[in-house]
Length: 277
Image (cartoon, rainbow, N blue to C red):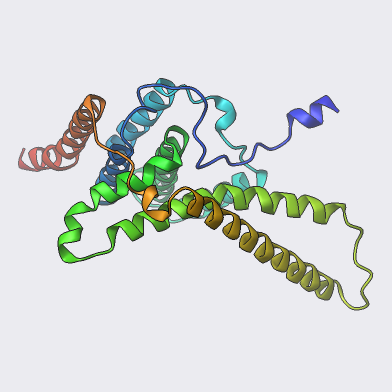
């Protein structure tokens, strides 16, 4: 029994900061959002191995600084490993440079390397987003978004309404996940339906029942959240909290600027110098 419990798959834990405090936890939420946006733009236009490695190193160092435990990492299901193996195998069939010649046989690893680069890039970006989730309180997101979007108010855009909608969505997402897990566990405890017809018909009836229960739970949660927000002064309080950067944020921007500068130098200036020589 103990071995089965140890092999239980750890669920994905997002939008909930890990306990404790650190310099990463105390950073302004707007800084974290700008850093993620800047790194995303960098890796979109220059997805080379050096920028990916630098961002991966940044993710690892930040996770160690924020004291993120290993238990926060979700378990990878077996079917995902199978999909990765299948994708790598099919990508390897494309060939391409670099090539390895073994007698009269030429093996190209270009497709496999591209697949590995895209896979590592996806893992790095997911880790970057997860770090923001593990080190940021949901209540800090809306004020940060409202402050970052202040220049857009000159165009009469409803920045505060967008910030409130984002805050409500982030608050409701973990609650709905927990409710859906309870519904799924309750469904597994129910005996199988004794309905005449094919198996697909029974599955259709079960899906309709689950969706109906999920909609009911979501409406109940929305009603409770609306009453709580009204009792605390309305939705305007969600984006009216004080929010501003500090000294730690200046240091973070300096590190990100250095990372971007090194990445751009490697991706742009180094190939130009090599082509001239």
